[in-house]
Structure formats: C-alpha cells, structure tokens
Length: 223
Image 1 (tube, rainbow, N blue to C red):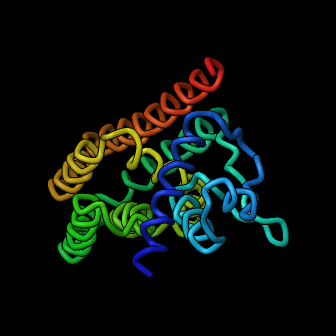
Image 2 (image 1 turned 180 degrees about the vertical axis):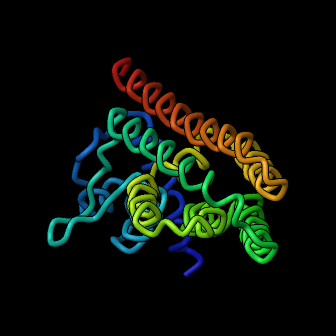
C-alpha cells in the first residue's frame, strides 16, 4: 500500500499542477486508462489521485461517465459569495444577541479542531465541513431555519472553492485570525463589527479564488 500511496501522491501532485496550470480546461474528461499509461502506473494510484483531487474541488465524478475537471467559473463564484455575504451577515446580526455561553463554547471547540486540521495539513476533506460547522454554530441561535437552509445550500456549492482558497492561496493563517476575531466580536456582542468582519472575510476569500483562477487562465493562454 505504501508504494501505491507514493505513486498516487505523485500522480495527484502532477495532475494538480497541470489542471491549475491550464493544461486541462474545465469539463475535460480525465480517462483513467490514458492517465495510467501516461504515468506508467496501474489504474489504482490514478483512481486514488483523482479522489484526492475531487476532495480538493478540482475534479468531479459523473455517474457512468468518469472523472472530469471542474468547471471553475468566476461569474458563478462571485454570485455564490455575494449571496453568502447577504444571507450570512443577516443571520449573524440576528444571532449575536441570542448567543449563550454554551453556543460560544461549541463554536470555540469546532474552531480548535479546524485550526488543528489546517495547521497539520491533514483532514483536507473536512476543512470546508469544519468551516461551515463553525459558522453554523454562530448562526443557529438566530432561529431562522429557512435562511439557514439557503446558507447550507450555498456553502455546499462553495465547498470546492473554499478548499481551493485554503489550499492554494497561502492564506490559512489569515482565515484562522478572522475566525478567531469573529468569535471574539460575537462573544462581546458587537454585531456591527462582527458583520463587517464576516463580510470582509467572505469577500476576500472570493477575490483570492478569482485571482487564482485568473492567473491560471493567463498561464494557459501563455502556453
């Protein structure tokens, strides 16, 4: 298994480089047989590599069709993150006055697990789950179930982009600082400051992803 893992990591690293470098455009089918031949490995490490890239949001599997590179649309990203700003600041403002010490401790415990996962570079599959769980812990006391359901849908659609931002923009420490700042403002009952920070947090994450994709597109054009 150790050999396969090493080969799978090599394939994942090289495919990631090629996808982000623009060699494979969005929606390109990644045929496992062809990749296995290309890398001179069996299908097993190729499959593992594709699953790794799926967890990072760069590849998606379609039933009965196989693996494809993800369509990374700047317009879609901006729309998703703009909607997140509108709904999440609205819910947070309603939630802050209702937060109990238990709510705050729950959010703090989730944030500790999230920090550990980010700092260790492990549990990549769970990064966006921890991210949403932390935000959800702060939002739940607002008792706005329909809005929270919409936020959950938006976060599911944003999942791959959030992981991309954390993996490729080198801003993990910034994201951690902002989460701790958000928790501090919530604990102090400072709704205006918390909502302002949350808006900036979401918007700057969006811009980081957009910049990454634009640089990727430029590299592809240059090639």
